Length: 246
Image 1 (cartoon, helix red, strand yellow):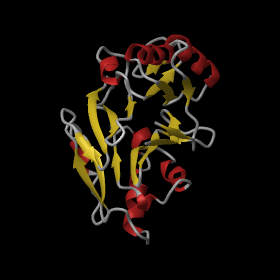
Image 2 (cartoon, helix red, strand yellow):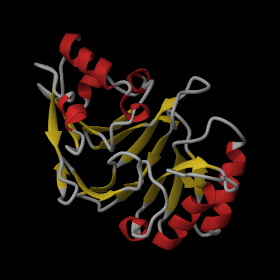
Image 3 (cartoon, helix red, strand yellow):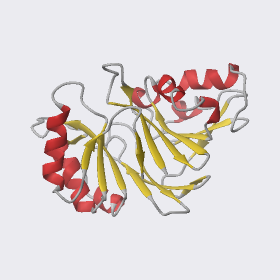
């Protein structure tokens, strides 16, 4: 299983880099995980969007869904072979209006996932945990069925009890790390220190920091998370268009 980072900023794009979007590949199966600003252009550097098998959305904030409409238009208008005749887009139903928009006639179809149940997507098995965020959001834990390799993606969340158990022993923890260690005030995202502590508590093999801040030093962000995670867990700020083997 491979993770390709398409966009990694939180909130809005910066420096030619878009917001949250990731390509998960297992064999010839391609899953788009969130579809933020700039996702489509970034995806086209890796493969044709028509070769996607499915899209999975953690929640409906715009920095995770901004390119969804143009992806639907491409599936409606573009010519060429498609991996699926109609592209399935998986989302939760706690927001009925946004869930309803996932279906675009003759192009895409919205499919509801139940966060309390296991979702099977081709060679991938997905379980969820509800996160702490201003809107309903669900963090997916994605396991490659044949190898048992696991990617735990926090989606957008504040720190809360239970997150470490959900991420336990994951091969890669992809963590929302929108704040530096000295952040003050309301925090609907993890700080660098909290991301590192989560990785340590969960005993993961690697920590990747994403949903990044546009200001400050990302090297500092990495150092703060690494200090909290301990020397046994490698920590890296993700890089766009970089492929990480899970």
